[in-house]
Length: 341
Length: 279
Image (tube, rainbow over all chains, first blue to last red; front, side):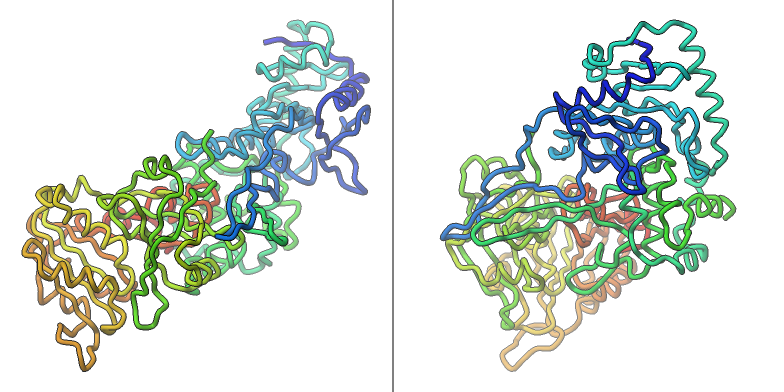
């Protein structure tokens, strides 16, 4: 693996220059928030920020996505083509390691042996992930180390950048990452840089104060589907769904149709297990009739079912749901409480 | 990469109104492309998404049998947007089918055994597929005694009446049709499905029962089969859940860690016992 040192003050300019050659999405200030957006040619991205308000899953699994088109004929609406897939390469710059890990978790679902999801896979193939390691974990709500990640994790990353103080250590991890070698330039990194990164990694992991028994609750969830615990957990939940919309690993979606005149499209939109209509059947029957069952589903899906199906917890510890919940429902506390059952 | 979300184009070639209330119809579809027909390999118990562009999709069990080549049949109750649109369609209309989806009735497990089919109301569709599959001359010898117990609330709500009449004449199938309450013309049996199961009392010796019907029927029928000595492994049913993708991605039809769309819809009672009770 190629490792280089890149001067700190040059990084934003390198990315800005790349934005003239390909689609580059990077963290930018938007009023008082930091959000990913497409850069104009030469535009410099933020390199010092905590994390983006939204998870970058939107670039692989957009909140609204056209699946296919159709058109009216005398005999009914007929298929008129797929989503346009050829849109060139995308560079996703400034992804935090927790969010990059979420891509590997989404891969497990969308890129299974049987039933591969072409929309996700096509975007994933065309996307290069450049991550910025968390030299100092940005929030007190960060808990990546409890769910299998760490502040310098390279899972799902093509090019990992770690701030060593005066320069970034750039690790070109995959062929997609290596394709950026000439653009990023820099000088070969020696043993000293590697050692420094290891020290930073150890210190950063130690700085993560939130520890939750995420793995430990799996056997408890296996035997506590029915438990009084679930009866009160959800009571203050407003069913707004923010937790699932901001979550980097939530993948549920709805499929719907939109018609204008003689043409229409079939689209998919993010959906949420927090919503009553999510499971409501035409007959009126709803297997998850109240917020109690929906909260249980959210917790079970992330910490039990995903482990059963894919051997991984479907949570990367980014803490977005903790920060955004309007009634302060904290998944860390929920997990800790389950551990006591 | 094949796109599993794109429906296969089909044409409506026959519509049968099954019941007096006219809200249950059987639609026969022919594939518009020969290669699609050849690729659509299915077994009884599987389902497909009936796909109407502009309206949406609805997951419906396949009511025809793979032993009946050249077409697919679905028996559909008019209920929501998609099924109501379907009910207004006429022969010649073009729409889509996405499938086959899900597992199937466990044909290899059923082979060599006596089969007891129990159906209630219009949940008889994939059971009809299974019966026609087993009764096919190439397949009949693979199965033992076949007993069918089928009930509806009244004679007007029995579906597949022509086939019921044809099966009644066969000596290699024991057909027991019942209605909760008959009318002036009804000469057949009266009584609820669980009661009839107890009267018919099929032996559990080397036997499997396949049950589909409204929850209330299933609730009262299961104890009858337990009394007759059927083990939970040998009681098989099919689940329904709200679905969208049909391929285990959209995340709404799971029961525990299993997705009804891809791991089901067919489960034995023994398998259901291991899952969460959320359906």
